[in-house]
Image 1 (tube, helix red, strand yellow):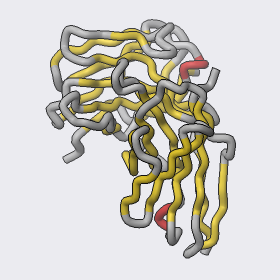
Image 2 (cartoon, chains in turn brown, yellow):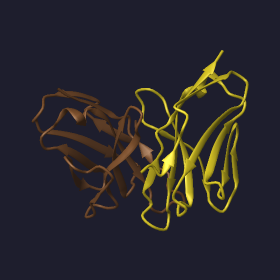
Image 3 (spheres, chains in turn orange, brown):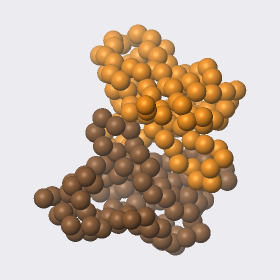
Image 4 (cartoon, helix red, strand yellow):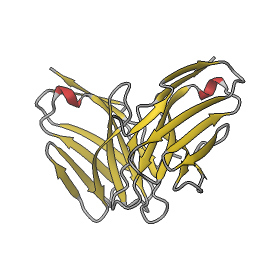
Length: 114
Length: 113
């Protein structure tokens, strides 16, 4: 079983719709992250959470919100989707107790906003 | 302003030869550097890392070199194999600040038969 899972894997929606992307992890990590990947732009951080009561904005948080429901769950919401939010979205986790800062990524959610 | 730059969007290398992927950074406070590998339809996976107190780290066929004065790092893959064809992301972080990782745009490596 995968350590970091994302649902759905693919989603097509219309402009103005509310969308939620979910992430679950079984690694027992405290830290979770949401990134988006656009062609030619690499990975950009949207939001991150260092524990259940901690939520922080990343580089491109406008138009997004998150909820850390439990240590293992971190969801990303688009309250009113727009076409330029069409992208590949990745959830990641990391372990604060490791001496390194390696992040473990989920398989991604491909979101298309029409 | 890009803090981590991978100026080559793609690179083609013959199987068996050395692949060299380059990365430059602008933030002198970065103290930890990582390389991630990504296959299509999968999330990035951690490949190798290096702390700023070192100038080289080796793991099997993969070696990362760090030149702090030039703010440059490179990933060497020797010998290159077909399974190495993927997108490689260079990344950096300030471990004593907030541990956020800043990624470059990636370089697509093609290993030619």
